[in-house]
Amino acid sequence: MNERQLIDDLSTAVLNEPPLGFDPDEVIDRAARRRRHTMATAMTGSAAVLVAVTAIAFGATGANSPPSVGVASQPPGPASGGPDPDEPVPCPLPMAEIVPGQLAKHFPGVEWDPVPEPHIDTETQSWINLAGDTTQNVYVICGSPGGMVEGIETPEPTLVIDEPQPDGALLRVWQRETIEDRVQITAEWTLPGGGELIEVQVNAKGEPFGTPRQAGELATELAGLAG
Amino acid sequence: MRKTEENRFREFAREQSAALRRTGYLLCGDWHLADDLTQQTLIKLYRAWPRLERDAAPVSYARKVLLRCWLDERRRPWRRAERRDGEIPDGADPATGPVEAHELVSLRAALFRSLDELGPRQRAVLVLRYFESLSITETAAALGCTEGTVKSQAARGLAALRTSVDVRAEDLTKESR
Image (cartoon, rainbow over all chains, first blue to last red; front, side, top):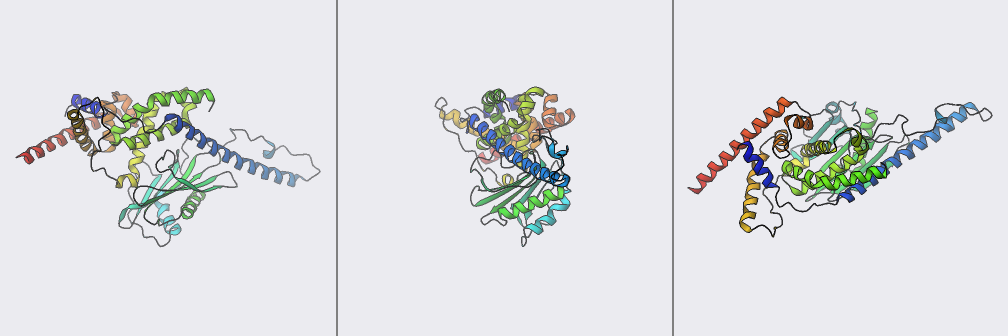
């Protein structure tokens, strides 16, 4: 095969393409809704922290003192130090060392493949299979710019845990049944102001070997270790 | 994102979706997965659009995001466990006769069997260079590698395709005897 023939074959292969399987406007509507939801949740968390800090500051200065000019009296402002949600969050965790131990802790009784899949391109991703079964596994990403569940269409994941944290971080866990009898659980820990720090995905056949709560706890602990 | 920015992004998405999906299809060999990859790309682009409009060429960036989505998709254990065993014919085009339709299905099957044998980056180099007609420099920028890597991957990819086509032709000859 030469260059000319490959050019012809590639062009021919996309002839008679089926119509788009989605409406670009609907995709954008969905992206906008998700974006608003994430920002709103992050703002709520930031506001809660601000109220708490303000209360402490007033308590410390006494009821008769004039309000001090400190952190608590500053307006929250959009550029108040939170990470840019469009930028990858740096991953401070040595994934290959930490993940196996964390899996044993959070999914007790599950036997894992002693040899993790080699990491590809980056040290910030890790997946570990169940012993003797390469189709069931847990996949962990640290410091990702985009969520695993975004863009998944069929079947759409169901949000089963949505827990804003006191510091403005957010834990969300989705579950969906994919092809045949497979179940996928995805937990995502988002930093205050946006940016996914930790994502954990459980891929199971039949009965899942982990629950959404276990996946969420693993994501929470990894976020704690990272933060 | 401001309303005007969003409207411009909508226009961009409507104009580019089909082209992005075609590239996605050649990367993955599955129109449905290509739909998913294109949607993921649009969602990621949406988040970066205000900055993108100011600083970068959106089409090049979109292609880069699509590639990243596909490479990420390939790493998913789920996807790796699922292998397509055959080409599912698309809906019949009334403008195409049965002979042409059969030829198209055969060509796609042979092409994707050969492309499936390549590594993902090698395949991406071939699609970008010979379908998107990107220069070596543009391909290197899209893949985040050096121009030398693009040249060597393109040469090796073509050689591998040639071998694959030759082997299949030989098999067919043996079968017909």
